[in-house]
Amino acid sequence: MALSATYKAKLREFEGTANHMYLDTAGYVTIGVGHALFTANDAVNLPYAFQIYRFRADPAATRSPLSPGSLALGELQLSSFSYSPLPTPSLGIHVDIATPDQVRSDWNAVHTKASGHSFTWYRQYTNCWLADSDVNALFESDLALYWASLKALYPAIESFPQGAQDALFDLLYNSNLAADGKWPNLKDSVANADWAKAADQCHRGQVQAERNAYTRQCFLDAATAAVQSYARAADESDYQSIGHQRIHTTPPLR
Image (tube, rainbow, N blue to C red; front, top):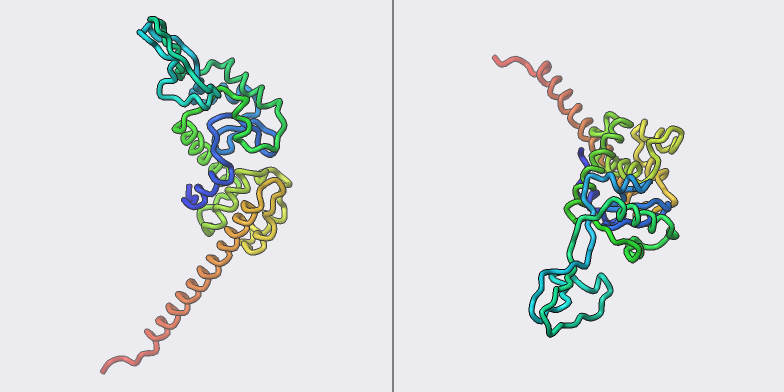
């Protein structure tokens, strides 16, 4: 995979990074960095463990507080806690592994909401979440899968200018680039390595203006890189041609 580090950072910026489920702009339940969960089973079958906050009693302790431990109460919208003067169990907030039914419940809750909100808005309707390490692992797995799909569509993708690789990956990640009959003009431009024309054909209606501008600039950067590459190749060809002529025209030494 030959995606630039700049593009990978931009992809996370454009998609956002969510530890909980939310609805994307197309109305699909999503998690992580734009990973769609089309059914509740897609969430349950992720190879990562969802976690959940739970109240649970600890062994009895003198003057035991209703203790949040190291976790923030604010996220659970608890405003205060009290102390008991008698030996009593401590009601603590703990992190447990979510059950499949709890994960499905989150999916169903998010699925019934209206789309169009920021991904953070859906947090209030969820209880289960993925750890940052799992979100990052899911993102890297998705990158590898999408790159394999892009390489199947364009076997020579790694020979394309870097800007074209990044732009085409973004179109595949966020739209139906690989579908038959979709993006015909853009695909013709790619087939002809006309990156400047591709820059004018990559607009998507469902993404933010900044993302469209970034993808367009990637194609324009590819066009510039291609021109520079052709110029270097022409210079090298001229140099070798002139050198070859000199070898045959230089009179022998006496």
